[in-house]
Length: 242
Image 1 (cartoon, rainbow, N blue to C red):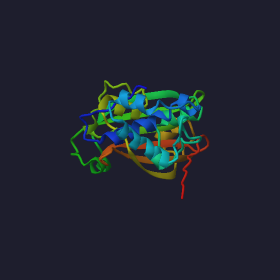
Image 2 (image 1 turned 120 degrees about the horizontal axis):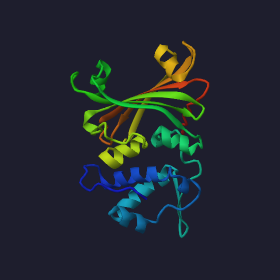
Image 3 (image 1 turned 90 degrees about the vertical axis):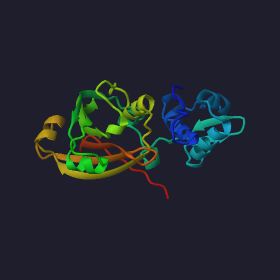
Image 4 (image 1 turned 135 degrees about the vertical axis):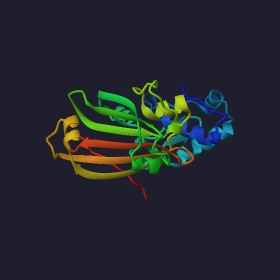
């Protein structure tokens, strides 16, 4: 396990532990039925008490993401990883769990002045530059999604960061930013000239357009993400439980 707890962070220790566990259960070895490390081992590894760790584990057990049995240990529940809003993943993590090989066709990171919608969302000045990341991704034979992400200056990302890593892993491990809340808007649009060129489709082709607004544990905005998906190559699934 490569995760750690920031004892100087204002984020409560049990909340940090909970978010680390949410990442841990997405790893392939634990998806295959292997027990997660026991409480003593995990608590010692993270430098927290067993009581604090147990609070985090209990939360995931209640949500049905972990199964704990006496003398048998704790395992990831079958089908725990889904598109439910309380367990959303980065694109890289989701595709890995689905067994879909992904190729990065383009990756561009630049500084840009924010448009009015970004100044409102981030609550920043129009002259304050934000980091913009553009990625064209898809299956090895063809791209099927174009992303444009903008990040609040407070996050601390720079052009020197390794953006080939899973984004939310990079944010947490290198900058101490835990992406906790995602709000999304999904609509259907026709491909304009720019998107048609990126996704290699005819002008006006149907595109699944998704806006994602990402917040940290204090519900402060950290990312404004736009995703453009080829309609015939991607299905967006939402699962709800009553």
